Each structure stands twice: as C-alpha cells, then as structure tokens.
Image (cartoon, rainbow, N blue to C red; front, side):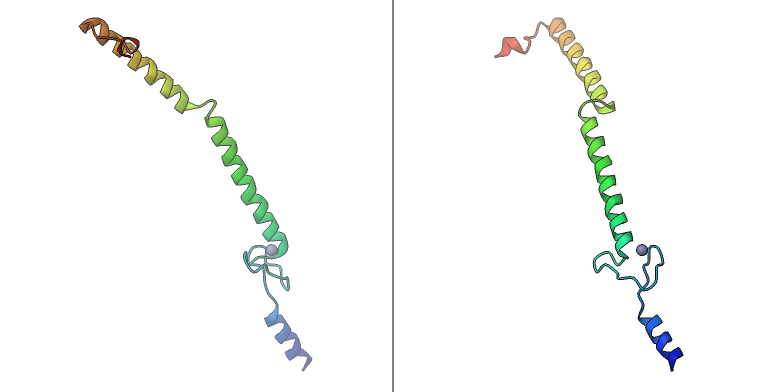
Length: 95
Ligand SMILES: [Zn+2]
C-alpha cells in the first residue's frame, strides 16, 4: 500500500524539462521550474540587450556607413564630371 502510494505520488510529480528537477512547481507559461524560468528570462533579456547595443553602434560606425560614404563620394564625383562636361547646372543653381 505504501509502495502504491509512493508510485502514485511519483507519477504526480512534475519534472522540469530544462534541468530535470523532480517535484518542482512548473511555471504555467514557460513549463519550466522557477529557476530555469528566471534563467531563461535573463538569457532572453541579455540577447535583447546585445541586439540593442549592436543596433545603436550601427548608427555611429560600421560597414553600412562606410559604404554610404563611398557611394556619396562616387556619385558627387560623377555628377560634377557630368556638369563640367556638358555645362549643366549644379544643385544650387537650380533652386
Ligand atoms: Zn528547471
């Protein structure tokens, strides 16, 4: 009888799918134990933090800015060459 009671209670015990802890209260949303749930929260927020850092840095430096600068210089040079060659009006003269 005791064995069946133990068996029954063992069956009712929940297992955390992340760390394998037995008999823990599982978070209804995450399905994991409180510790794994909080650790997952931290990992998620840290990843988001890194993403934000990368995005913020991308506005100040990075290959996109260098590419845009090069393209700007290239087009300006090309336009000034065209204006000189064909005697066309520049941007300021057109306003
Ligand atoms: Zn866990």
